[in-house]
Image (cartoon, rainbow, N blue to C red; front, side, top):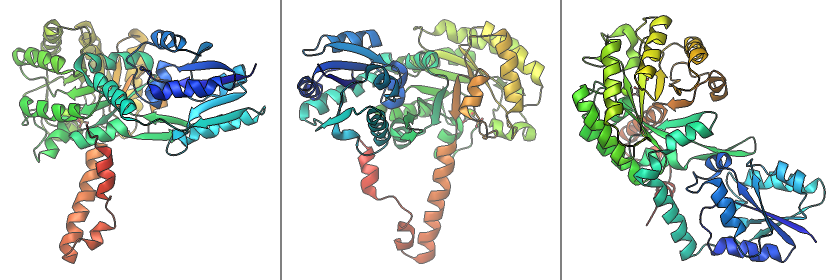
Length: 431
Ligand code: SPV
Ligand code: MG
């Protein structure tokens, strides 16, 4: 009896999957792989069904002889252990980032003479509807809100990209790359005060009020499913912060990060070049504790941002504050620095982790941008935020287009550098 292997990464079975199984049965004994949660978030999207339930679902299908867990996105291990005579896959992976996976499977099969069978991918009204419904479910507040905590548990490091509009949200949601044969994508989105203000042509001094920030979040949420971390500036008055915690939680935001400054907050990247006042440990701890008391679910996270290194108050002050904030109930600590090298951040992380193994650490490597995610993870960092790179790439591109049109009294010259509108439209989902 020959063995046929096919890997599923779905929460809902539709006619496309049944078609693959029908085909597979023609070739022999059918083994279905259930892709692990960890691999799924890189490959495709977060699963709304736990792995054990996906395994049960696949096992209940007609014609499935065995279900195994495929831990890695690459098939090497499964193929080496199972040595299937055939691997069956839809033909939709011949192009784009997924083509690398296909190459990997072909190389693994070649080692012992296994064969790849590709069946035409089923695209029908029904499959489209099911895909859409799954996406909608992921975007609902109760699913989205808890996902940041789930990702922190699941991933060596969670990667968040700055967004400030529906369009930038779509970029964070849909950008997938192939790297070393595997697919990769961002896990979460950061609604930056700097970039949200900049998009409105305003300075980053808590001038853009909460109603406006909520409007931005709503625009992003309308078109995405990934979890959202809000830059909550100082959190404002504690009496106001508690209400905002409830609002954010209800909307499905996963976390708010508040920084330990008072008075007129200025952006941290100015450091000590502008006057900035750090809050007292006591006051900031009270704000964190009040926010935690106001929260209604166990999902939402209040992350405390320590500004001691930015304000050049030293490592000891940063650590004392971080431990105090964690004790006051903070669900994570963000440590920030504007140094060109990551040394002080890594030193902080090592010293914090020596005494606190669990509280997630968040960093924003804007200035110390040579550090890799892998290096940060080895020092105990859990979330890395790319806080302003989309805004900084869009601005010069738009400015140079404006200059070109003005210079040439027409748009032809500028057009050569522009994306065809058709490509932008393809990014936008139609219902
Ligand atoms: C932001 O993105 O608004 C931040 C991070 O607060 S930073 O600009 O580096 O202070
Ligand atoms: Mg900010």
